[in-house]
Image (cartoon, rainbow, N blue to C red; front, side):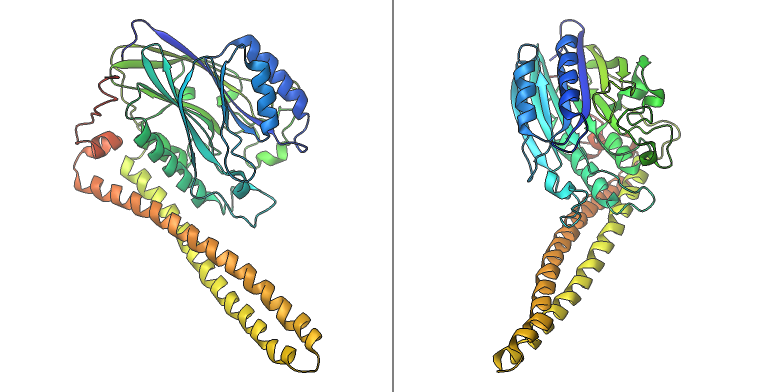
Length: 419
């Protein structure tokens, strides 16, 4: 529904880098963050990498007077790390874990155990229904040889589809989080183009903070400049994205970031946005003149998923061979074990390695089969959308609304307010 007057929504977003026992100055940083949030009185605070529920409970206790509503999203073995604090009461919450999230045997990265996900918050602010999403996508560890890129693209597509299908009754849609993608990366472009979300950094009328909106900068006390690799000045991987129904006009009045000094709250810089929502037509998100058509973005994402699918199938075939080898070693040890001579040594030399190889190869084979199915599904979904776009002249400029809801670019709810 339309607000009777302009509504200003103040939003705070931060990847807190709060890994218990591992993150530097975790307690001190969280205390500084608590003091700051208590003073600023944001409408919504969306945090990532609060890995410990104890830390969340401590934050909730200290912030309860300023932010009476709070929720921690639980996922995976370690947790999603996602939580929110709000001045406004929560109407509903929902967690959607991503289908793909790295590899369980890559223990040094730990992504698979974290259960990366997207959390949905439904809020009623005055007469407006707001859907706020907080998320954290798979990290990029090596830009030149990124084995996780297909997973991150699949997560971006899954996130875009989740937002598209759960925001149809919302007046305002807000997405905050650490996307672990540069603005020009295919996953980021896919997310923005398919959902129609606007980037606060590109839309803001006033910006103050790190140059080019960078959220990982060498000046940050907790950042090792070598980790920035080919981007010595910094990178922008944290975002505030938004849109509103066609009966509402939404704009970003101000956007600020912290500036990476010794008093930093994290190794990431925080984002602070002031959004203005008022009655009136909202301009649809339009790609810039140098951006390719939507169908090209979808095709680029599908090709990346296809490469990941091919690798998953190759690895699955390789592990099938290892399964056979392990089984052969295990069976080869049985005659000697059954005999009266060298049974113990035969088991040590053939049986034990064969069993270990068999179990390890079986686990990997199962995972690669799962990975191939998930990548194949995402690729098939994108291929279907591309085919529909190719058959539908002129609809590719309308994005998912035009494609999925009649071809005229309208959405029964987003273009009609909260009925």
